[in-house]
Image 1 (cartoon, rainbow, N blue to C red):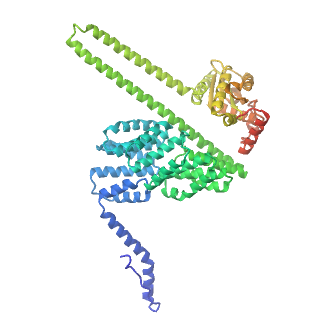
Image 2 (tube, rainbow, N blue to C red; image 1 turned 180 degrees about the vertical axis):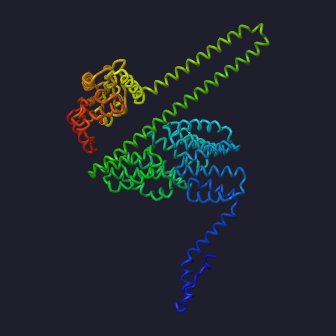
Image 3 (cartoon, rainbow, N blue to C red; image 1 turned 135 degrees about the vertical axis):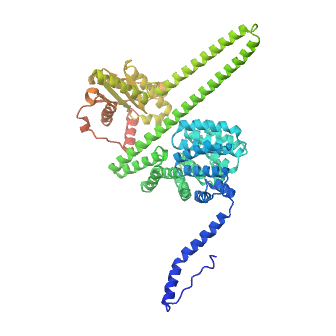
Length: 629
């Protein structure tokens, strides 16, 4: 039909025919497109619904454009069975998740799982809910749903569907930072006779778990084999996630130029997937590597694209890397205004990312505790059931089994008391972990904030004064860089032990994060707080580091304020103490500075560029001065 559609060119001698010919030539492309659409529509219309569903299942993650076209065709059909309708609803929910609309996808999957009687559909919808919960940081309900999915595995006869459940478990455990567990789930799939497409996904999540555990193989050949396998299956998203992991491995081993060329080679393919997280990963990595190679102009557009693609997930690592890259680019240009704005964005993204990591860890602990309690309840019910069965026997032989009844009752009471004691101890242990910094044994930031606000409220009611000491270890990053994080952790614990000696039972001592600490002194004025801060500073500087196996110095800069200067609002006390703390940093470190009413007018926030900080750290190392952040 299309080959026969030709428009003749009339002569200008016939004006009417010539005008008609012009109009027909203008309409020719539209007529050709209409003919093509009608032909395509006829082809789709003649395809059975089951075939369309099967095609959609195959291309849903490898060809998003064709997948959307198939969904539109399925939406136009009305003659679907109930099972086919439920499968279409699942594919719609999957499309929402692929597009990044995870909350909508979770809601659709939840409705489908609730109403479906088909175990397969219920299982797939529940698995999709787990993925959506992970993407929207709803880790606690996600873990609960994952437990339900894993319990359903025994009722699923289709091995491919069981493998799908194990892949979901691997994905979620990677999301919450339980990489060893994720690796085990992925390797379970690879050890069985899984389909090539499923093996592709399992290999990717195993590789991701190994990367976060710093256990990637030294030889790149297995990684290339996995990438090639996924490419053969048409899974461009999965293959390119693995390429990004390989590129980051090369960059860590001084092969940044190879990594840059490798990422640029597949950038068009990545863009064609329309998968925001993958696009953000590639561009943020490429921006970071280009900047490290001294190409800030080339790095900037990649960082901007990574930021744009990461907007739906403001707590993602690619966004942190992209903002940090933009900040460093502005610093190199000398654009202080842009650098400050990018640094603020970087700090907010980094804080959101760290908060997300903590939320994952907390959710994992909460659900594991709930699971333990459930198993304890089941065990207790089983024991009670056994007792009831024994009591029935006792009823039939009452005269002979009286002593047995008494013994069993005592055993039951002892069992209940024992489990109650164990549960109580476990609850107290979890509460202590939630309130205490695991490394130093002092209050963590959340618990310190809660207790400090309560103490300040009491002080405000009674008119009692209070003082706040805030200190930060000087150039602490150099210790980690030179001697390793174990030595850095040793230093943090020694600092906490040293300063704890200056605190009374009524005082609060907490770690705000990293190498930053705070002490709230109840009933102290500014002069007494400064004296205590000076004592802490001197004791920290006198720490003997030889027990760590290395020789280095530890110093800290202190900021001090009290309620007479900053009021009873904890945020203002922390802000003023932080202000003078950074004044102490700029004036040479290893000193105490006290907040005065005119301090805020005299001080302006300043940050050191990476070059200045590196130069200062080098000078400190050469002169034997203290090391740190």
